[in-house]
Length: 603
Image (cartoon, rainbow, N blue to C red; front, side, top):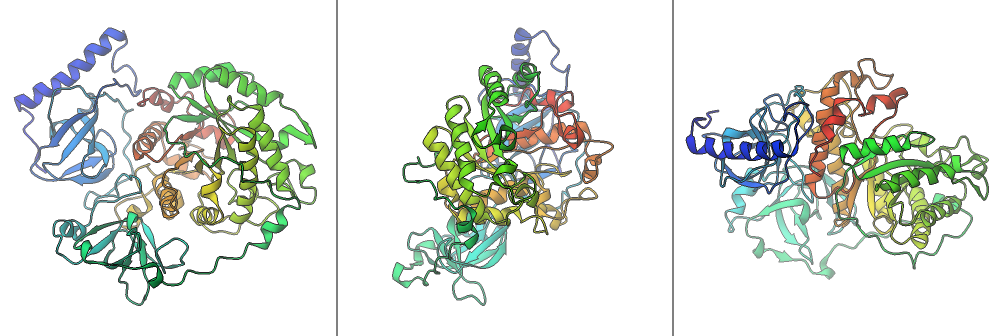
């Protein structure tokens, strides 16, 4: 690749203005050296417009340096928005205007349109990521819904409105259905980038009938494809010409048997709010911790505004009707008193509520007992606790002990809990329990399949936000399983051959399920995410030996930046701030480079 002459006087003067403007502002407000710590630092200012100046395509990378992953290629002359500048490396963070992708390029490759300062960002000293081949571009940043760059056929046809209509699929694995709607069965799946001839439009023009060999009826959602060609020439299929919709499935008998008491009335419960905002959150060890005020100071230190605490019902109601609120009250008093928003994750059941079942890791025999407790929590803390997550990782047997791993059963629990909470406190945000990232095994159900099952049983109606636990294991946040499958990514020794091992893949797959179910105005709530680091990992966490503490800091920061930009994430909660025992301590950020790096994320 050939680069622009770095001695260009006009270019140098414009970037000198950027740096000097920032330095002068920092000098007047702080006596510390700009480069005294590896923490992120920033100055709030409007983004600056620019254009890529190069003789060949430019690599868009995941961080400010050549050791970071290549995320995409940018064409010469592409217009960009400069979001941040890193003077230590002389790189800029940009958003490509035509695709929405964000990443880093060398500063000398961007010609500024004006001499306005860009925010300054300093990342910790880079640790090289696992290799992502430069020969093939990786999948890009996702929007709403998740997009990929147009394929060559789509780009060409978009410029030729007389060409035969074609749709190029966007999701990694896109469902093809037997009719224009998610209530039709899935008849096939196609890979991202598949170019499918469009033969007709659905009645509302939001579904395409496509030509796939061997299928009489093949339909894809228009919102999940990029289209080109002469769409105006296509026939719009009338309602009476559609294939007959399938009969609705019978209600699972397990749901009817889950509770002997009648379900609470739902007619008066407020509808979901959607929660259209982004904020930074973190999970802290607060329960029975005498240093709650100190912990509040630690969270203030990184500028976060949300804190998560697990609320185990089994610890609070040791006999029917006798609830000990003292510890939960203390957590709320200190955290709310310090100005934080609070998410309580409510789960586990006392043994008295499930006497015929082992342990406390599953729900009660009568789901109304749990819903009643949730309603009491919502009423007691209305206005001081902002959100409740209903259960935790219910697609894992040990978290759903004594019951079949059935999304219909969980939705029965959520429906009752949502109604009880909203009737006690209409402003309380109800977040669906986050499944654990997993494939289908003897003790777990694939979390994406499970999420589809939740939607099939009413998730959109009974949640303000969708919980997700997007673990990254030892894989960088920008990489997807498709990168490994295509040979673009050289992975660590383990935890790389399934979608559930990739932070971004899990996030994008969940968003695609939301879009496919029409739940587009709601946001994902990552109620637990993070990367652990340990030179001597615990059994089952051996992948952590591949992550240095510096890499942990980089991955966490880059994940937050991705989620902030996507536009369909609400409050990500980092796991964790300050846990000090067992494998949980390997994920903590307090006392590590990650804590310093989090301080100056764009707030």
